[in-house]
Image 1: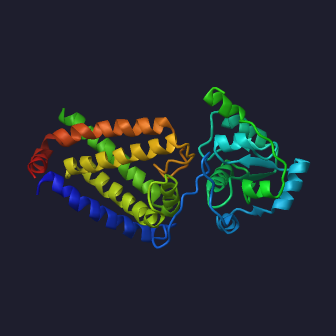
Image 2: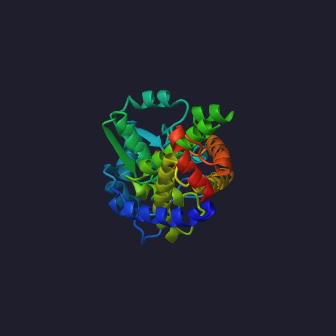
Image 3: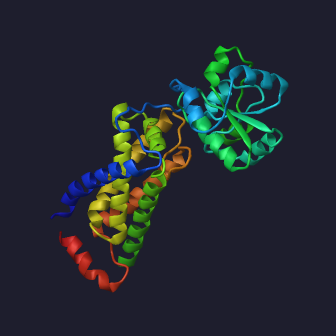
Length: 176
Length: 148
């Protein structure tokens, strides 16, 4: 068989192997359900129905009213998991910016968060999964009480306080 | 030359095997990350994501073993070209997403694109000359591969 014809064999066999492996995965993709884009970005927002997903991922969900009170009393540390542009355009007062991939001054950010017993992580809302990723990471780093908030959009709709401006690390990184 | 090619194929193949294995425990998340690139129709995303992992795993293993090296180099060349396009369009559109490359939460940056360009460059000699050999005893298999 010509070597380039082997491609026609390897690709379909590999694809079938992938489907078999999916069936044995701990968290398989649901093949019969469409997956829509959900990344937080400057040009888009996430989908809907965040509460069930956040709860399903094993993190406790903090009700919006409780979060607003906690924000006013500065009793919890808010962590914004969205992109830098979204954070700069508006975020919960005092929130620190910590996207899933971290940033150059992450050590300083974590130090700030160490003051709080409870952390509340949020993203745009919907099925982003950004907040989930950051919450998982914070737990792995030893933070004991990490919760999720319904999302920035609901916070805004509820009239929660807000401030704007880029985080220091992002400004340094982008030369702003 | 033969040793360099062999080392290149083992490195490249191992990287793809690792990439596939790192995604296996949570294919659901990989599907979400694939969707975030906004390049595929939503109904195709889960099947494509699962299939891609299988192709990476099978082709990676074949390349490490020195079997069908040119064919797998062609597959990796195609995949990496597609990854470069996907990553670049996401960056240019300002989509803030995690790469999904190795199962973690690595953010997409131009460094990610640069890494794929380097890997793509690694495919070219393998495509042209085959997979080389780590030891003289593997000459026979190499010859068979080149002839087929």
